[in-house]
Amino acid sequence: MVKDKPAVMDATSHKIWDLVTIGAGPAALSAALYTTREDITTLLFEKGVIGGLAAITDWIDNYPGFPKGVAGLELSDNLRLQAERFGAVIELGEVMSITDKGTHKLLATTSGDIKARAVLIATGSDYKKLGIPGEAEYFARGVHYCATCDGAFYRGKKLVVVGGGNSAVQEAIFLTRYATHIDLLVRGDSMRASEVLQHELNDYKDKISVHFNTTTDEIVAKDNVVTHVVSTNSKTGKQKNIITDGVFIFIGLRPNTGFLKDTKIALDEIGLIKSDSKLETNMPGVFVAGDVRSGATMQIASATGEGDTAALMIREFLHDLK
Amino acid sequence: MAKDITIYTTNTCAYCVMVKKWLGAKGHSYSEVNLDDHPERQKEAFEMSGQLAVPVTVITKDDDSKEIVVGYNLAKLAPAVA
Image (cartoon, rainbow over the protein chains, first blue to last red):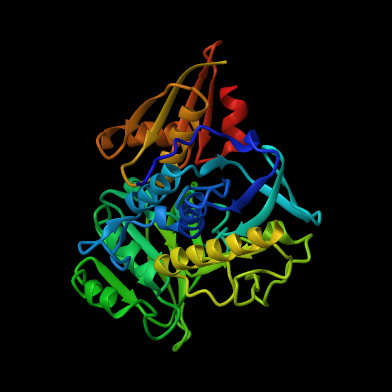
């Protein structure tokens, strides 16, 4: 018989938590579902959005079990509800550091010091910045990284979307519900987006113009209002101004591992966390799952799978501690 | 102390959900202006925040002064509603 456990605890409910996850995206929520069902006390720390990037994704068509697709926000909320149903506790706050104390890990957090027997790092990744003039200056005033949040401000306006991967194509399509026209600027000579999305993009030919071999060099504003993007065709070297009211940037992901800079947890050359076949890092008892793991395939389905695998490895680790 | 809290949101904004969840967890009541339902109030949100982004949380204090927090920013939101 399945018994629901109400989540009535907070971060200070235990002297030592069996497991603290850093992040509450799909990997951590799935891990928490498994650990709480094994009576492993589990606390999840989330400094951003519960559900991570999945929650701010308009629509997800490639997560198994949803034949018609599912809204990112709905999937995230369901993952949260399922984990909380068995007793997972989510704390809205930030973990600043991890210290190995031998018998436990000490986490410095915005809710005070927290002790954990095992830690799962599942901090995921965030959208990369272009690093061009105008990008930081006009952030949230014409430059955006979240279409589902800020797209509504562009009803009846023209937009530029930068990127050629799944996120760029999917969010450009989402933005057509508001914008009259979108220029999609792709640095390479082809799309990196999935075939399905590229086919879908073809249905929006009248609203989305794709510009290949096009770098985005500068975002220009007049009187603090974005007016155009300066772009260059990398084949011809020809520069062109693209008139726009706003710019949405989706050029890939960067791992959220900044808080590990003072630890000895090993990262690869791009900042992703290295792990062994048990998803354990080089700090014993600290595991990693999802987009932040070196070698991850950066899919929601693989993140939940990795979360479940990590949970089983953590169960073994905790068993061996006894 | 906050006398009144109003949040400007949209239907698809996950950060808006987080602001509402956090305020609820801290025992604060709030009213919501959904800009998908009321696009005519978009200008009002922009004029208050100076930004084309949601969530915009407007905290009216006991002395009727207003503090505005854009985004899901607990470092700003927590002291603003305290």
